[in-house]
Every structure is written in C-alpha cells, then in structure tokens.
Image (tube, rainbow, N blue to C red; front, side):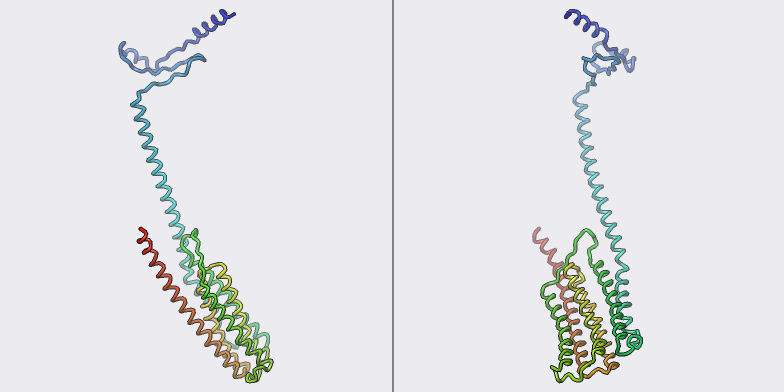
Amino acid sequence: MVSQGMVSLTKSLCITTPKIRLKNPKIMQNLNPGSSHHLRVLCTKMSQWEPSPFIRSSAQEAGNIVLEKTSNVFESIVSETAEEEEKVDSSQTTNSHQVQVFKWPIWLLGPSVLLTSGMAPTLWLPLSSVFVGSNVVSVLSLIGLDCIFNLGATLFLLMADSCARPKDPSVSCKSKPPFSYKFWNVFALVTGFLVPTLLLFGSQTGLLGSLQPELPFISSAVLLLPYFILLAVQTLTEILTWSWESPVWLVTPVVYEAYRVLQLMRGLKLSAEVNAPVWVVHMIRGLVSWWVLILGMQLMRVAWFAGYASRTTNQQPESSVAST
C-alpha cells in the first residue's frame, strides 16, 4: 500500500509540473548564457504543495521606494492638518462675521423700541386721553401705558444682552455684579417704596397730624399705583439679570430709573387734576429728586466700570509680557 501511494504521488507531481509562459518571448533571444537577469514567471498551473511565485528585487530599489513613500506620507499628513486648520479658522471667522453683521441693526433697533414704547407716549400723548378723572378707568389707562414701556424695556434689554455677548458663540460670557452694587440698588428700591408708603399710611391713620387733609384712595392710586408697579418690575428684572449673570445688569437700573423720573413728572401734572394736598405734591417732588440722585449714581457706576474694564485690559498684556 505504501509503495502504491508513493507511485501515485510521483505521478501527480509529474503531471502537475507548472508550465512556464514568457510574457515576451523575444527576451530569450537577447539573453546570454552567463547573464543573471530576473525573469518574471507566470505559472498557468501550480501544485498544491508549491508556494506562490514572487518577484525578486534588489534591496536598493526597495529602500528607495520605502523612503519615497515615507516622505510623501509625512508631507500629506502635514498638508491635511494645515488644510483642516484653515477650514476651521475660515468657518469660525465666517460665523463670527455673520453674527456681527446680524448685530448691527440691533444698535439702532433697540433704542428705537425703547423710545417708541416709553418716551414717545409719555412725552407726546395728551394727558387728557389717558386721564378722564379720579376713577378706575384712569388707573387702568396709566398702568397700561406703563406696561407698554415694560415690554419695550424687556426687548431693549434682550437686544443689549445679545450685543454684549462675545462674537464667538462658543465663548461663555458670565458677568457678576459686586455685592456693594447689589446692596445699594436694593437700598434705593426699598427706600423709594417705604417712604411714600409710610407717608400715605400715616396720613390715613392720623399718626402724622401734619399730613392733612388725607388723600382719597382713588386719587392715591392714580398718582402712586403705577409707580409701585414699576418698582416691582424693576426689582424682578434686576434679580433675573443677577441670577442669569447677564452683562446688562449695569444698564437695567438706568433704563427704569430714567422712565421713573418721567413717570413722577407725570404724577406732578396729575396732582393738580385730582386736587392733591400740598404735602402730596412735596412728597412727589422729593421722590423725583431722590431718583434723579440715584440715576446720577448709576451713571457714575457706569463710568467707574468703563475705567475698571480698561485697566483690566491693560494689565493683561503686561502680565503676559512679564510671564514670558
């Protein structure tokens, strides 16, 4: 049996001898018997025990190919990273430019909304069209007039917040007011609320005998109820700007206090219509003086903050130079 297997194996090897076919038969004519040229052999039929043919090449050629490919690979990686960085920079500059172009109309639209909603009705709207007597209709008309201003002030603050944000939307902008600023703002609001409230309460109860005659409830609502509502709206808006860390915390009191001065000047005109006592007129004048003083302090804070920001920007380059 073993001899039969060896015979069959020998026959298969003889039968499966690979046939060699030259790709170009003319090469044989040019070859010399002693020359050592490498031939490219194409086998039409190979045995299952014979390995696949391979092309022999010199080590120098292989080294040249490897070096060339290696240099090309490094150059391609550098060029690809440079192209990616250029694309990212160009996209960022394009996005920031688009955002900046979108913000340009807001510089005119925001103040126009504030002027249309707040100042124009108070300055040019006839008082007779709002006040029709000491009744509830007049109170609601005055409150509605102030609500229009509140809507315009809210839109203005939102636009100012968008303009104060950095050009790059990915950069976070958080601005926290100092504690002293919060304290004095709260102090001004509480004082502006308590003083007229205590005076009206003392006049109604007779605790302050000099504040006579007392002011009727409807007349006091016409003169001071819109004032108290605006105080509450300003307090809520400032608390929201502080909690949201919005950069408009410095502008918010200026907007509301400027309108409050106009609101109290309107109250002085209405005091003659409702036949308010002399002490009520003096109280409203005192409130006007108080809020003009507070408004001036707010403007001083704006000037201080501008100087503080300029000092901070000047110190940053100096610190960077010192560190280098």
